[in-house]
Amino acid sequence: MEKTEVIKTTIGRLRGYLDNGLAVFKGIPYAQPPVGNLRFRDTVEKEPWEGIFEAVEFSPIAPQTLLPDHPLVSHPQSEDCLTLNIWTPGCDAEKRPVMIWIHGGAFINGGTPFPRHNG
Image (tube, rainbow, N blue to C red; front, side, top):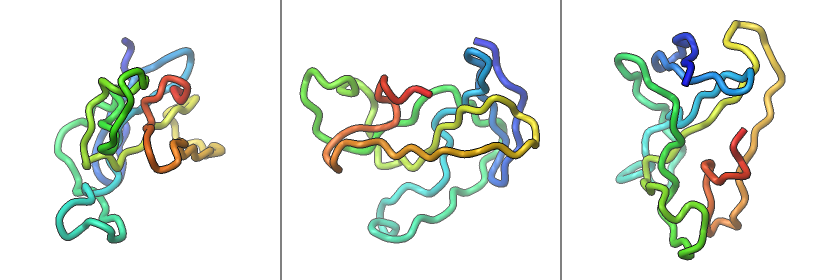
């Protein structure tokens, strides 16, 4: 897997990988986990991290009950699931259009690593 250059963000540095001409960054945390006194509240920005975040794997999905034949049944689950995934044609400072995709699932099941949602 060919890695991207290191990207600097407001909360830390990260590195993704190249796939079919795109730079891919997966599982980037954007907020603190919604647990304890943060449950059912506005999100709180993620604390900056040290080092380089390797953004090469999907993050855990929100806790849910999945049928045995569901594609995500073996994917890790965690309440620390406030993350985003980015596919971009370049890592430079050029501004580009943005599309935001919120996965379906009727508030019952699903998550970003669903095979049909991969980029």
